[in-house]
Image 1: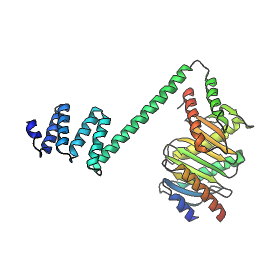
Image 2 (image 1 turned 120 degrees about the horizontal axis):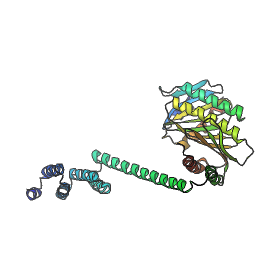
Image 3 (image 1 turned 60 degrees about the horizontal axis):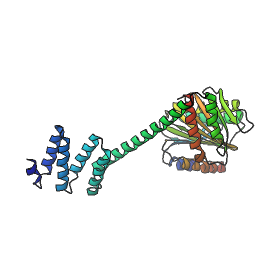
Image 4 (image 1 turned 120 degrees about the vertical axis):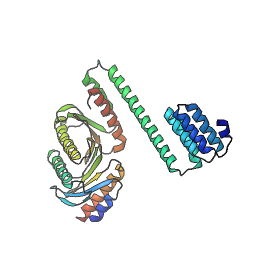
Length: 240
Length: 110
């Protein structure tokens, strides 16, 4: 029957129905073969491409699904359904990539922490802070808890770490309160640009990590470096 | 002053724009119906007082606060504070630049 159908140039609908039937009965390879035949016989029809793409997606073969979808879009570039499908596959791919990258970096951090488990906690934190203080422009680091009590301070300028940490913590908590009242979620970062320099504050539920930076250093250049060390310190301390 | 507010609110992602005096009273604003402008003005006033009293920095500071679902930017001048409430998708660089320019324009007009 299949041969008879394949020889008929107008049999697209029948081929597709048969492919659906094969799929329902778990004959995936047969369904794929039939859809490939349908593609060969009907060069301008996008339906068999679309169905073949969905089969590849079910099989978890996203690369093949993307290839077949892009072939279909060469025939109908404006096809809304195909474009939506392409967008959703690409978004899923991007999400998976980010998830994998996050898992990878967390594994590395966890491994590093595991290796260093015999080293005292304050030494580990001090090592991280020292890395940060070596970066040009960073002149001090203060770490306080959520009520403003000093955890750590290393300052290359005549400033009282304890009182400065407490004041900055008050400001951070006040902004956090407003953010929550406005339903904007949890506060993660505050940058305060002052006439004499800038303050970068990264917060968790129970810690505030404050970096004091010279005025002439470009914010975006240094922000990532501080965030990275903050994340590492957070892992070492085991805080959220 | 109204033109400046309109200019700032036209930035993609800006949901509210507020001009607040040093006591925390709102001079002028434009923002969404669901945003309580008094929450923002009260916070702005408290923070500027904290910086002025505790750190001896009465003005010329900028604060950018980033939360999970929104951001607040503010710039403090001698007589007023200009604040913006935005989404997380906003172009931070553009906002900060315009905030500086607009605060200067307001200061010049006062």
